[in-house]
Image (cartoon, rainbow, N blue to C red; front, side):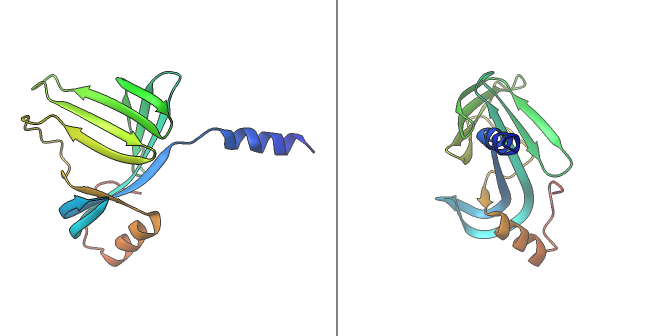
Length: 144
């Protein structure tokens, strides 16, 4: 009888990572708020950081697009920084998760088209699903 509660406590001890819900902001993002109108649905993005190997994986949407970041400094599952240099033009992108708040920083002076909008706002799950329900015209980048 005691095995189940101990197992549940052990399972709860592992931080599963961070999941955020992204929508394009047609305007400017200020203090995690879109000053403008919400646009296309980017989707659910989950990150799991591994302090022991100093790596981070991300999964976008329900179809399981998974990416691994190797050049990382992981302080905890909710606080980490990963830097990626692109060989095509030596541009640098830094992904930062700070206590569950995500942002991406590009090195100034490098024009790189990553195929997604520069302005993205992360919203709560209920607001994300409400937006999907009430804006069926919004293009979905990822399923899920």
